[in-house]
Image (cartoon, rainbow over all chains, first blue to last red; front, side, top):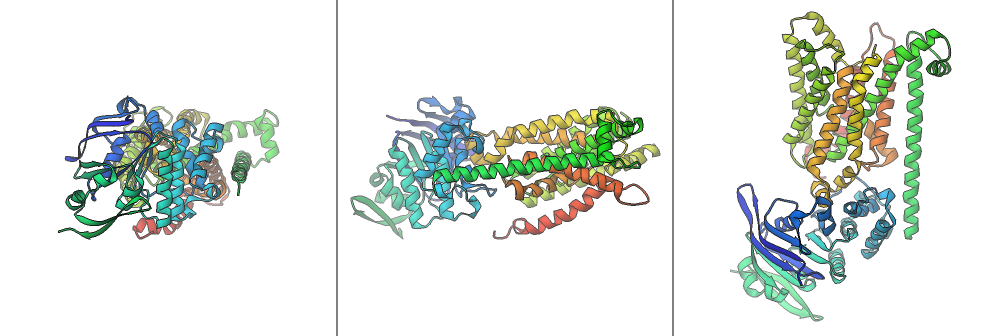
Length: 258
Length: 347
């Protein structure tokens, strides 16, 4: 069964083509890691999937063409977690999470309908930030802000979550926290697409891996297949230490390859 | 802490917002009464209220209802739309230094109006005036946002605003320069200073529809400003049409500021100051700041317009001059506070 399908998805920024004919067929209840060297087009692909930039080709979600959806309908299907977790005003953390209900028409955090208030509560419980609700986001630590951002994305209760480097700039504990939060969402039926530079986390937590290089999909499959020695050498130009620990795959980038 | 406690704290915040707004509304009411009572003939608030509702002497009724009421209504409405415009622009740009006057909107509106007068196309009581002012204000804010681009920093916005207001000032000077009628030039010069003196219900009828339309447009977008707190891209991903929102805000600001400038000339810095005064009371939520900023804008302009009638001087002080004299030092203070962001240093 597939849930998210792309055909010949291409993106041109200015005169430069940054994505070439991407074909994907991703199932629900699945966590996909999107990896590749800097500038490979990972963020661009994520934005194209979310409909945030003009793209050629087709994207279908749950059998419906993305182009036929209104902005709000699209926002209810794709929850997007950008890099950096920027919040411009010192708002209460709970109001930020409540913005996840914006696509559902619950635009005022102070007057959330019961159903939306319940979704916000569930999301905050899932990433354990209930006690941060009244704090101003700008006063939170980077890790706490990352989890608030994740709660906002979970509160959308969308069938697809697109997360752009959600673990960047987090300490190891919060990296695992956030990835496990996304993994848990995938286990409840959500299709989670995560852009990451952390091959170790990708190998360990994702069901499959997509490798991008210069705007092209060069490898995909299970973590072990997609992140084969050949791919690491040719795409990332590294060699890695590989092992298995507690029956999970371990990949540690070790040295640059010649 | 349980989930229950969280909602209670949110309720306390909501109650505080409501009581602050009520106190502000009461202050605006009080200032309106004082504004109606102050002038060559001083009237007590009781006399003012009597006269307003058709009681008291005929003289008091004429003074209050025909001479001072239009002035007070204009101060209320124009202060409100300037405060609302400032809060809306700050919400749109996620930037506490955004305001119509720093972006050259009133200056451009004034140019539009001056052009119409200087060319002899219309007199100062025609609808051509606000329409020209609105078109010019729309052009200036649109140009500013187009030049600054998406996610513009403070520095770019303020430099572009400076350039646009300088251009509008130069164009206004040119229009006056080329105007052959010295009386017209004198009239334009006085009116450019920004004043609420001797305004009639004709002026109210000229400005109020546009101000009301602008206020409705800006207020209707309030929830999108909150989503924009997360940046344009995330707001877009939440279903906000950011391009359309920008156009709505530009149109709302242009309607309000254009309508206001067409009857009073340029009155600056209310839009910058009003939202700042409200943040400590209301919080930073850009959606909740709109109405309180409008109220505090009204209070500021009413107070300034009362002050120019009380301050002893040999000739009349113009209210636009007073708001700038108070507003510019406040602006400097804000620059000092935001200088790290302005200097592009490490935050």
